[in-house]
Image (cartoon, rainbow, N blue to C red; front, side, top):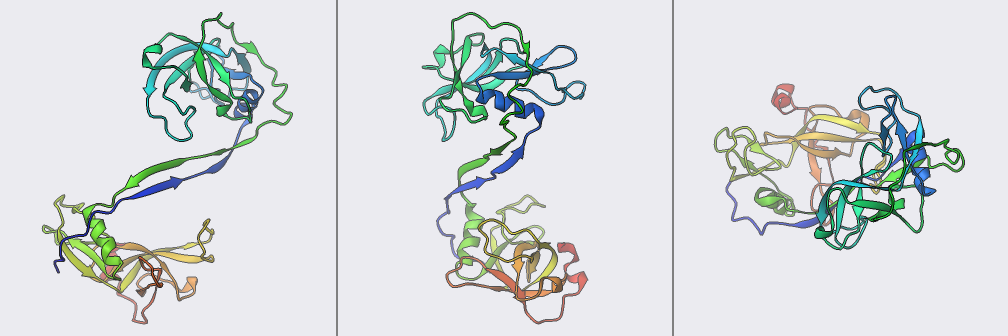
Length: 321
């Protein structure tokens, strides 16, 4: 079927977060514990190079590195880029420069922020020093930023015995990974979402190979041509393959174990994802015929349940696995 003109293209803010707890090895633990104590530590390789930030294995020889050394909190900018629009949770809330700084006594550079009044005040080769955070917890943010410096240079790296590394050492961190952006599903998926609000599933047919894609992509991934002919599929379909989920996801009110499956809706040439309910998890199987279950006010099927029909023949869905 050919539908009427699509609704206004949808747009919505989207936040993707992957915070996770990371354990630290002895070198990274000493480095972050050192920052908490106002000391910058590196490691010395077997050929005498000093690496800051420290790593646990030599990137050239792959040998284990454990010799800790202390370097100065002053250094030289090796390269930089101006950031005129700081984003939330960046080191400074006013325009600043991202800089690579080779600290005195080190042979590699550390990436951080430089507090400067403008790009004209930044140059490769300028001298800078660490500005320590007022409160330090054992994280890279214990270095609040770098600032211009015209004092004397620091000396060579000196051995560090790690005296504070065993007492109240930092042994783990929570890595905050977050992406904020505005997402637009585009013409094809906007029409798909609008149809779901009417409890219909609508895909698009390729004018060349005639495959029907659900969800639609706006173009055929095989032929590379635009897809504009809309086709209503389903509502029933066939389980092509599945997995049993045994780990409960945060903020998801579904008891484990449950089944998540690829479902080829009748008339579609691409399987979509859906949860299988209304049947014990260990009775779900390939070829099971299912239909959508909608909740009141739901914008998409809550899950799929068995229709009671005989299982589909393998040859009917083998190309969609």
